[in-house]
Length: 205
Image (cartoon, rainbow, N blue to C red; front, top):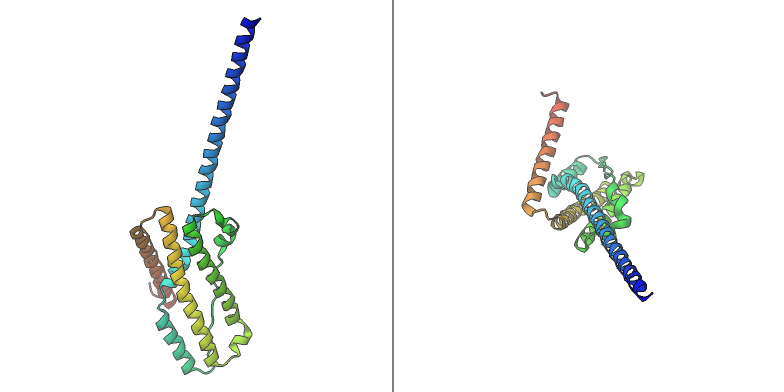
């Protein structure tokens, strides 16, 4: 009986150890897979946010704010009935879709992105005021003061967009030189497209 019980107990112990080892290996594999999926999600979120912020940055970067303000000021001075038309801002769809999970992003990315998004939201609300009927009913001097504030907010938004893109680039391991070259190429393409559009409106080939 003792000779039979010994091997049975040993087999049971070995079986239990094998099961524990199997469970541990499976658990580690599951954790690695989950971490891999999380890393991919964080990476994809950052790439998407960078694309959206860079799109804003390209639009903001081509404007000389001081020269633009001088031009608008001269228009108000030349025409007492002039009222500047302010366009809506593009939808910030990507940030809206990921904001509930923004906590998974690296800490060095969250603050710059949130600062940019909060100011962008403020600008969007201010645009609604500038597009309201009561704005066009204000005196030209008052309109110009509000519009000047709007342009200063856009200049600040440009700076925050640059800071957010730089933070994401560092997190993704993108070199500053590569990022600058990418932005320069994109800006050049944007300027070329605008020139082609202007030529088309004038009927030029």
